[in-house]
Image: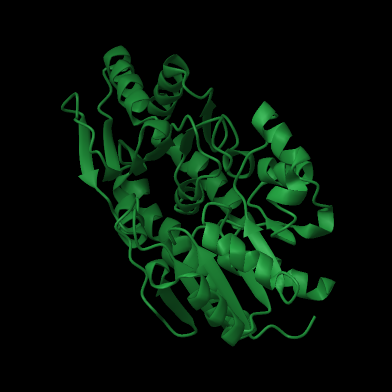
Length: 353
């Protein structure tokens, strides 16, 4: 394969952690990145801004003729397509598959459902027609790619990562503060959506307080339909950017992601990197690599309010020293991934050509 000078991303809703990987591609490989991304029907208020080596383009400005002309002019060596949800992106993938490496990102977990088994049978038309490579974040997604008929050499690891430039030094900054007085605040950060399990979290946390009489508080941070705090020890805050979360983490003791559906969960990596114990459901894909139950955090069965309450009570019962140790173990686990590692994984396909 010829040296890659240009990479094009055809993205749905781009997030800061994806941009961190683009930066690593620019820095380590000297490529130019163009990213076409959705600018309508967004779930968060984040808006990307052009920077050195990276140019963002609004999806609404492209029709079929315009996107084909745009890609042809750039002559990308690699084109990343965020998934199968955009018909125009799929047309572009078919058009340029013969001339460049087409990679799709996939956070789907293999659950052996009838729908997934049908997709595996239809993979030549659903996936292989469009994409040469699957880029996946973890074990469950790797299995999905295998089931779709992709061989090991066509499955790329390390898709999703926290931004080390934002969260990389947070743990060191926070340690003196937390050693002096460990904060008794549990935090959730993410979208306020049914599948995130925020209602379950409020119910379980309230039950834990009633059982223990603890002085812990719960803070819910996010965007969407804001939940109504049901008790004085529950607070609700609007959406925060990554930098705000990192800076505020000194005031938070445990992170909780109680999702009933969470293919991966980059936020787990972010707070593990910040040195915080993690509570999450077994639906969270990132838990496989980034949370060790009863060591760096607690994993409970998805949707089980009683199981979540038990995990919360267990966290509340830990001493400050024990919580610091749990956070330290999670911090060590967080080192398995970074934007640089993700960039190297993507560029590894160049050696295959």
